[in-house]
Image 1 (cartoon, rainbow, N blue to C red):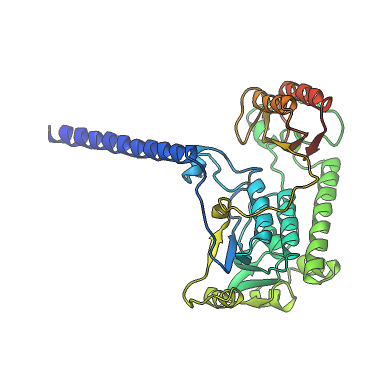
Image 2: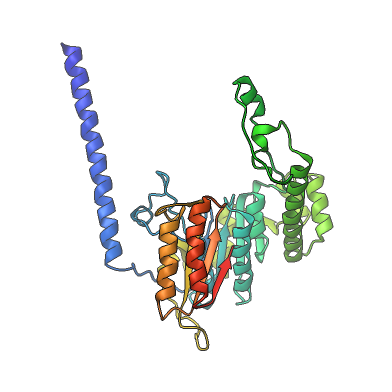
Length: 385
């Protein structure tokens, strides 16, 4: 009998705690929705501040507009990170903000594709024209992180840190052997030797055509990577390629010796330099603002004289499906409705469709195509992919 009551009370306690946690989560969501409905929060920037950027989260095309992102619940399958649209807008805004003295890039790994990295990198290059410095620091630099860091006026690495500089590669997993053991025979219809998406289920290694196209793609990206880094670090591309091919960057001292970084510093040494850079009066404090908070800062924009009144930017992010979709899945109903609304709005002078998608349903794509066709008959329509 004692065991019965023991397990019964334990179960009751578990149910009570689960209910309590769900109640807290619900109240947080309600609070986030209420705060969102009452308007954007106002954030002020102290004089002589640095804009801190980390890029340590997956970067969606735009910042999610969900209650979960408002309360910072980036887990449970929802990406709550700052989107590319706000990252670029904030870097541009920092150029004009007299309270921002520079940008501090605190980098390690940047989980983003090279197209996204290129957008951010170009924005940082434009920021440099304002005369404000960019300082990069990392305990570890992945190649994606270093690609962003290479634009900085100064790049610092932890004395016991590391820098990954070994070139690009690609791996393909093949399941044919597994399927053979399970007596499963895939039925594949293939058109063209370069259509290799189904090769993992029909082959045991890359076909010559697949290897060729992947090699060309990687070399194109890598060549651009080396050229951009070489230009900003004043190192010939061939020299950078040799460093990578020979794996010469093994220790932090190697990165310093070959000019990939400007110094090896501990965090306290870096903070001392940043305080001097911003003319900080308090030796213990450094005025900073995070990129996510800077989205709520209002800065006087440049004159829009001569520009169109309004341009609608519509996002198609993620796989294309029929139905409503989400911020990360392109739903044909949702997207075609947005295009239709922009087409009918007399204040909208042009439409930009921002596409970051691997493709998807042919039927859903046709639904969207129809609205695009109607829209371009009435106003300029431009696609940015």
